[in-house]
Image (cartoon, rainbow, N blue to C red; front, side, top):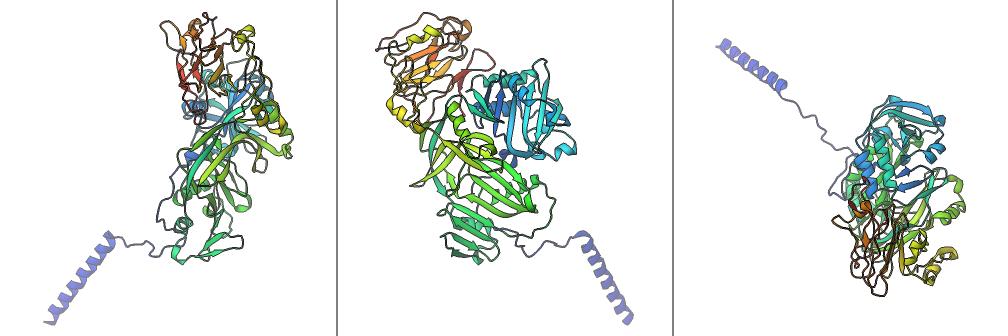
Length: 611
C-alpha cells in the first residue's frame, strides 16, 4: 500500500515538473517596468499641429545670377521659389564629392559673369539633415559636415555645370563632380529671375533691391494656450506642482525639480529641466529630431517654422526654429518675444524650452501695402549701422507688434543677422500711404501718350510720408498720387489709375480700383498673350481709367482719357499689353503683382505670381 502511495506522489511530482518546464519554455514573463520614470510625461491633450523634420529644412533664400553682374533674390513660399526648389531641385542626385579650399575659384568672377543659382541656409545645416531635401552621396568627411550654401553655375566659355557645397567650416568647399543637372536646368533658373526685381551687391554676400520692395503689413487675431495647459503638458504629475509669483510679476510653476516661468502676461514661457552635465557624442542632427518630437508633444507648431541653426557650445546643444508668415520670417526683440522656438538639450534630453503661447488665426483681419527702402537709401542705412562689420545677412522680415483685443500686427522691416547669430531690425518700411516715385517712361516719344502736358510732382502726402525727410522725385508726365507705376513686378495703384511697362514683350497684368475691367490683348484668333508672338496686338482702355503700356521696343500702348475710348494702331513687334483685373479688387488685402508669360515661352499666360 505504501509503495502505491509513493508511486502516485512521484507521478504527480513528475507531472508538475513537466508543466513548469512547459510554462517556462512557451510563456514570457512580463519584464516591463511597473513604476514610471520621472522622464515620462503625461500628455493629457494635444496642443497645436504636428510636424516632421523635413518640413523645417529649406533655404533662407535663392540667389539667381543672370550674368553681367545682374542678380535677383527669391524668398520662401513664393511661386518661383516653389517651382525651382520642389519641381527642379528636390530629388536630384549629387555624388562624387571632392573636398577643396575655397580659394580654388574666384567667386567674385563667378558671381559677376556666370549664370547660376545659390541656395543659402543661414548658419548651416548638417548634411544628414540636408539629405531630407536632396539626394546626397559622399564620404564620411562630407556626411559629417554642415553646409551653409549650395552654388550651381554654368561656366561662361563652356557648357559645363559645376556644383559646390560650402562647408560651415570656414575655407572649405565640396564639389559634386556627378550632379544630376544640365545646362537647361540652370537656364531655367535664370529664366525665372528675368521677371523679378533686380538686386545689387552691397557688401560680402549681401544683396539689396535696386528699387523699393513691395511688402504687406498684416494684422492677425490670435488665441493663446493657457499656462495650465502647458503645466499639464510639461510636468510628470501636475498635481504635485505649486505656483508662485516672483518679484517681476512672472508666474512660476515648479515641482521642486522642473520649472515653468510664464512671462509677457501669459504670452511666453521658459521651461527648465535640469540634467546632469556629462560629455556626450550625440550628433546635432539627433538633437534636431529630439527637438521636433518634443515640440510635437508639448505645444505643437503654429504655422511654418524653419530650422535656423544648431550650436554645441559647452556640451549644451541649442536648437532654434523660426516662424514664417507667408514669405517672410518673424524677427522680434525684447521686451516682446514672438516667432522663435528654442530648445537646449543634453544627451538628447530637453533641458530648456522657450516659446510663445500665441497661435495666429488662419486669415489676417487686415492687410496694408507697405514699401521697404531699396537702392541708395537702403545702402546708406547699412553704412550707418553701428555694427556694420558684423553683418552676415540682410533680409526682409516681419516685426510683431501686440495690440489690444487679442490682435497681433506684423510690420515689414529690413533685418540683419550678425556674426554671433543674433538678428536685429535695420530699418522700418515706409509709412502707410507712401508710394515709390513714378519713373519717366522708357522708349522716347512712346511715353508721351501717358499724360500729355501734365508734369506735376508726386503728391505732398507721399513726400511727407517718407522717413528722414526724403523728397519724391517728380514724375515726368505722370502723377505719383494717381497713376500707379508698374515695372513688371512692383506697382503702386491708388484711385484706380494704372500705368504698366512691359517686360521684353511679355504681358503685364495689374490691378486697379476703378470699377470696370480693362482688357488688353485683342488679337485675331489667338489667346490673350499670343500677340506677343505675332507682334501686332491692339489694346483698349475703358472710359475713365488711364492705362499706359509700353513694350521693350518702346512702342506705345493705349491711353483712355476724359471718358473717351481710344485705340492705338497695331504696335511694333515686342509691344506689350496692359491688362487690369476686376476694379473692385482690394489692394490692401491682396497686393498688386504681375501676371507673366510662362518661362518656357509657350504663348500661355501664367496666373499671378502668388506666394
